[in-house]
Image (cartoon, rainbow, N blue to C red; front, top):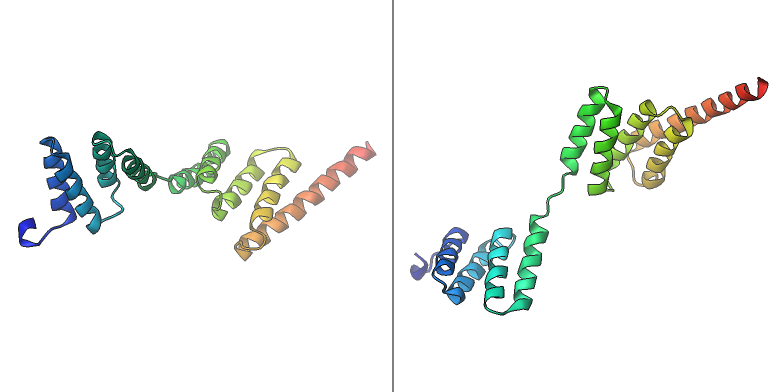
Length: 176
């Protein structure tokens, strides 16, 4: 089919693999490059090209394709971590929920929902009022200009409530 002018990523990848197995590296490189013409975001194709270029001594090309393969293959798990955090929140396991919300934020620090949910869970988990408030303040600081107005309002109200609670506890402590 390729000789008839037809091709696809699949055909060129298979031909590239066949030529690789026959130690015909230049032909393999040609076919893997042709496969990239159809789909340039395939990490396996870039990986194969990286290996082939290394075998032929073209180390800069090898480096470029291997790095591209890594970038394309990099998986972020913030969605999965968020779902686990929410599941643990619903199960009444705040310690586990906090663990997975923190993992989600490591993967994607711009995830507003996770940062808000983390504050809510921290509010139910920690006894120390200042610690509870700090989670809301961190959320507000990060998203005050770009966040969801409803979530911002809820966080601001909770900060006010915690401040009142802190003040009331301080007043009670001074009268004793």
